[in-house]
Each structure stands twice: as C-alpha cells, then as structure tokens.
Length: 437
Image (cartoon, rainbow, N blue to C red):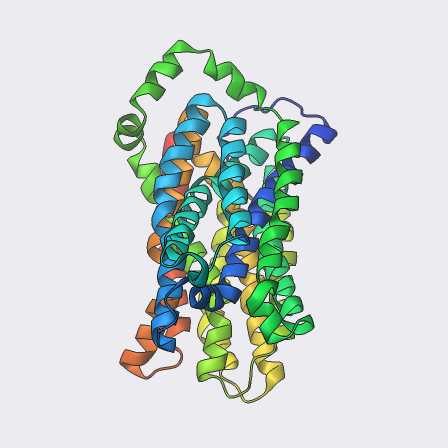
C-alpha cells in the first residue's frame, strides 16, 4: 500500500492541552453554526408567521421561510472571501474569533426579535439582516476551524483530529433537533408560539461564550506565525484573490468537484430524507429513526478519519464513495418501504457511509493548498460547492421525482454526485503522482 502523501509540511509538536483547547473551541463554534441551522429548520415557519404580515397563506409563509433560510447560503461565498482574507493575512485565530461573534450575536438576537405586531415590517427586515450575518459567518467558520485543527494536529494523526471538525456538525444538528423537539413536547402550542421558540436561540449565548473564551486561549500554529513575518509572502497576500485565482484555480476547482458528494449527500441524508419519507414513504417517519441515523453518521466520522491516517484520505474517500454509489438507489427504495425497520436500516446505512466520506474531508482539503492561501482557497471553493450543490439538493431531488414520477431519482442523483467526486479525487491523486515523478 502506498503511504498517504503529506503536503502539509512538518508540524511542530503541540502540547496535548493546547490541542484540546483548539479542538474544543473549534467544535463548539461549528456545533453552534449547525445548531442554529437545525433550530431555524424546526421553527422557521413559526418565526415567519410572527415576523411577516399576518394575512399570509400557508404556502406564502412557507416560501418566505425558505427564502429567509436560503439567504444564509447566498452569503456563504462572501463570508468565505472575507474570513479567508483575514485568516491568510492576519492569522487563523483572528478570523475564527470574528466568525464565532458573527454567528453567536445574530443567533442570540433572533431570540429577542420583536414581532410584526410590535414593530410592523421592521421585524422581517431585522430577521433578514440577522440571517445575512449568520450566513456570512458560515462562510468562514467550518473551513477555518478544520484548517486550525489540522494545522495544530501532530503528523500521522491529522485525519483523526481533523475529523472532529466534521463530527461537530452532527453534534450541532442533533442538539438543535433534540432541544426543538423537547420544547415542543414540554410546552403547549400557545407557549411555544408565544415565547418557547425563543429559548434555544437565547441558550446559544452560553455555548458561544465558552467557545470564544477557549479560542482566546489558543494561538496560530508556529509555522503560520513565521510566515506572517516573511515579506515575500505578505506581498503575495496583498494580491489576494488575483493571486489565488491565477495560481490555484485548478486546486479550487478540484475542491468544488470533490465536495459535490459531500454537499449533495449531507443535505439529502440529514434534511431531505425525513421529508422524502413523510411525502413519498409508506410509513410515518419517527423522530427516533432520524436520531439513530444521525448517531450512525456521527460515529462513522472519527473511524474514517483514523483510517485515513493509515491509508490516505483519497483512498479512503474513494472506497466509501464507491460503496455509496452502490447503495444509494437500494437505500432510497428502502426509505419507501412499508416496513419501518427497513426504513430505519436504510437511513442509518446511508448516514453511516456518508459519515465515512466526511471523516477525511478536513485533512484532505487542508493538504491541497499551501499555508499562505489555504484559508481563502479552502473556504471559497468549499462554500461555492455547498451553495450550488448543497443548498439546491432537496429541491433538485423533488424536481426529479416530479418530472419522472420515479421515487428512486434521489438515489440516482446521489450516486451521480458520488461518481463526479470520485473522478475529482482520481484527478487529485494523478496530479500528485505527476508532481512526485
């Protein structure tokens, strides 16, 4: 077996205490980001009902809710440019401090929003502004945190430690979903609509405070601080986007292509699968099944990250993507089953395989770019892929079913995304082999 290619360079030894601070602070920031994602998905229609004019049809409210939700995706590439610039020119820590503030403050303020009855149309305006800032933060938080973790991680363990950044996404989704269901189950519908929906948004302040406090205790990796003093590197940074797109456009394109299965798979498995079962399935979907599938997703991530340290991220991802292509259509057939156990196994299997694909993503993405343009390159390319392929995945899957009347089209769509990313990984492997020759 050919050993994995290391393009990260030598990483100075980092104390275990410092590494724990780095990983914990980054996980909290990521979890907060996706915690809000889950909350808005759960309470979005209710929030729209309170913030928009009351004379709305149910369809109109749903469309407004989705529109406000989609604003976050529009802002992600812009956030990637902003935080990528800060991270590459002024340090990873400074970018991550600003990104957690840009997520925590708007999320908390959503819990304090005045309603349409109190301030009229200004309630919708304020909600939109807050969602724009959240989307801006999402453009730099996940990619910045995984870069920060991988750059601090010791050689031979970058895949394992980097996978914790991916794992935190699932932790945030689970926490937001469970808390939303808990509030919905404990409080009466009137209490939830009156004030209960605000509680989880307000609680996010505690997590963000802990995350920002831990980030203050961290510092940029030694190799990054050293490069900041190199005037030649600083001169290159001054050209920023021009330099990035001129010299690293192929690497950015590779990230976009590799990320197709990550973007499509994540949203189809974690978000769309529930809607699919409810709309097209033969049995009612249970929250317990979704929770178990997310746990399967989460447990698979560090296992795959560990394997990537042994066999290489590209090899591990290609093998799991190949398996995903084989099982996508059968699993969506299973989600359409009349037997609940088949639905549960199908969703858990899809989730576990997607988790295995997610595990090596941080260490692989970080290895593609040199340090001086890494934050910008990874963030911009990743968020372009997520905005184009991830944000649209549920709509594309629904459209394909509507046009073809084939309930297995989401599985075909997911398998196609896997084929595209598999060839993207093959191209990356071939380019690295040519450089070593």
